[in-house]
Length: 512
Image (cartoon, rainbow, N blue to C red; front, top):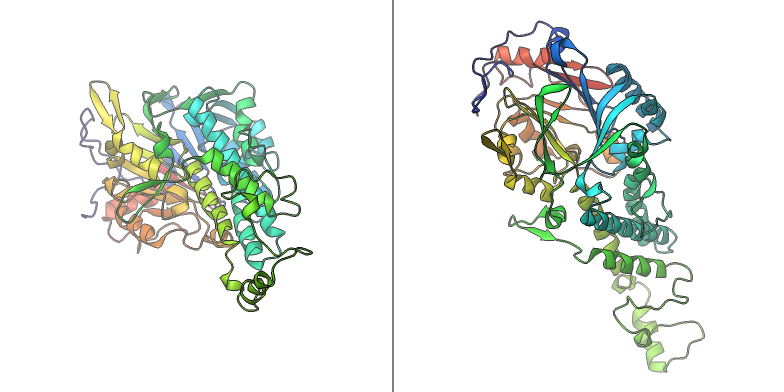
């Protein structure tokens, strides 16, 4: 890959219809860069959670058009309320109390917790908010969306049942499993042992925060789909917004990870019934769980079960078999009656992946230059793959998903830099602009506290550094210095350094 030799916003773009010769003198300071910026992207560094504020320059130097994408923090963070109040107050000050659009990408706590009453809702309640955007899967009029939400509620209820039963189990292995799985409940604002109504799409505190702006007076709600035409922003006429996800295809939503051969698989196909059956099975493990149970969901008739119960008579041969084999000291490892409970872990991963694949994914394009800013939230394999087939008629031409990736100059790295949220050949490798800048909203300390030891994923981290020529911002690291930017030309290095402002709470990139 050749090193860029001119500033990132100074090169003409080889796109039909784009004006040629957009040369710009290098800014002498970060303040000058911000003053002349077409957009300022404030990237919050408050911990493991997403929150980005985009301020697009208004017409003729007027008020900026302000877009907030998510605002949340993971449950294991220290002092979450204080941190989110700092973020929300900074947002209010930066945009003079006005948000034109709030984008709610998906219902995970680390993306929406700031809107909950336990954190910074009061700050947002004091602001003037124009619109809130959701993915089409949240539209109450959409039948598939309704079913997907019902499936999520059923799966979450089964997981909550499993966690509660496992934690009360005398088995050390099941206790440990309950502790591990309990962390997943935090994404939906549930405590261990708390239940939800499997027939309702309302899931814990996360759903309450996620839906907050729908009920806020004078806020317009929009449900967006890739099938819709690209939209323009009334206060930023040079900006066009493309919706890449959620995919309007159930199969793509339920594709979570590629196989070694590059093929994707479907998981838990009959999800609503399976989740209900697992819920009943987990519940049966608890005290008195079998009383009055029909066992309709069990694979064998109850009359075929055999076990050693107090007061129950057995033949001497059967009693000897139980005592000498099944209950033999030191042979506990042979028992398999708990092995089926590993289904809870599959259920948890499935729930997480399918929720991430319903992410609202947006690409903001500058109409005059074709430069793109990509915000995929936590989208995983199915969501990313669906972009390859997207096509929109724009004017006399056609814009495709891969073309938007090729013109991306800013990439908010998916799912905090995890291994399965940035596709390789049909993702990052298609981002071929030499002006590419990337940001990972990650806190390694909080990731490790949540047992995510591989976040961010090192091979992805290294490839991002290569693709950006060192222009990779990581929330828990300082801004890249000259050594990291050594492959850039002096002009491009100066351009980047004067375009990025760093504070303890945020990075801010000014694109001109």
